[in-house]
Amino acid sequence: MAIVGLGGAVATTAVAGVALLRAGAMDTTGLPLANLPEQLTDQLVRYENLVFGGWDLSPDDLAAAARHHGVLERHQMADVEAELSAIQPWPAVGNVRFCRNVTGQHLLKVASHAAAVEAMRADLQRFRQEQNLDRVVVINLASTEAMPDLSLPLFATPEAFEAAVQADDEHIPPAMLYAYAAILEGVPYVNFTPSCAADAPALLRLAEERGVPVSGKDGKTGQTFIKTVIAPALHARNLHIDGWFSTNILGNRDGLALDHADSLASKITTKGSVLDQIVGYKVDNHVVHIHYYKPRGDNKEAWDNIDVAGFMGQKMQLKVNFLCRDSILAAPLALELARLADLAKRRNEGGVTPALGVFFKSPMVAHPHEVPIHSFEQQQAVLLNWLAVGVQGPQPQPVVEVAKGVLAPVFVSDVSDDLAV
Image 1 (cartoon, one colour):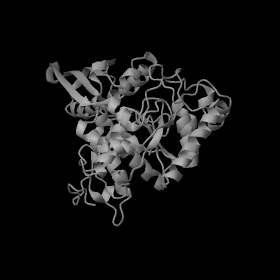
Image 2 (cartoon, one colour):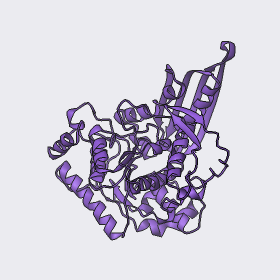
Image 3 (cartoon, helix red, strand yellow):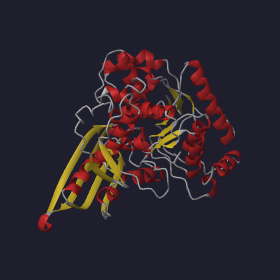
Image 4 (tube, helix red, strand yellow):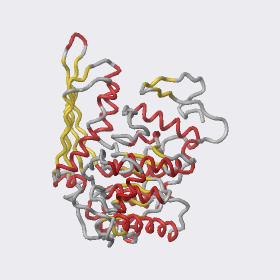
């Protein structure tokens, strides 16, 4: 598992979690796929078999990074400190044009985009060889970048993008260089950030041509997760959503990155796109705010006020205050995505992996005019059905069918709580 942003709070939490699992110092609570039937999950790499490396703008080993982020409890840190101390990030690509508030000096010493891509590919090859790995997955857990202008010709085709890389075009952000390097290496790429990467048309087509799974973007961890659970229920009761006001405060490195307007715009775009698709009409008063508040650190607060109209036009309100831990929610999703992306590669599925949409605020789609599904229940059904396809022996019946964004139950007599597999 090669991570972009290895020294960040989410990445260090993920690495520490696997180390604690290996040591028998924690259970699998919080890992979304751990409570599924073994018949579905046996085809996935075991959590304990994940090996970590990756890039970061800071040279600190992961023990130092984890202490800085302050996510782990003291006893947990003591259990994994030796293992984390042995992991040193590789020099990374940074560009203040795209991420002004999070910088560092641990940079790849290269003079061009092309040289950076070759260095990243060499890192992946060395990682595979030195760790004696069967396969590698790249997952982007870095800070949010400003959105490039995807209407520019250089993003339209693989050939145009390659020419732009060779020309050292200033419009190419770091996230795209990592995605490009991964695709050229035949390595699955997961974009857990709101940054634009493999969803650029040129890279998406290249991934399809080369049979490389890609997925993203922006991990659905806290407020948007809750939103995509509540909104379908309100819609099912035909309670009209007149407005939805969302506010977030957080103080970690992700929050610092979002304290710049360009990076914030990328995040707002992914968080604000879910409601209209779920309810089937435009929610005119859908407001999303994100604020950097340093004292909170990794403790994030997500507050929602929902205004609805019911029978006889009567007005009602619903208020949700989610006091959560940013990295504690995000790290397990990153681990699951690495396991699932690896499975997609073993199944020879190139391009977008739609089944992974349940983990993202703005799920990638294979075609420009395709509308992504946002309802959590529908997304989860797609994932479970995709996992069931790989089960050996008699094929299980689908748990649900999802067609044209509509969830319809399948009445199968032998579907039990264990999905009958």
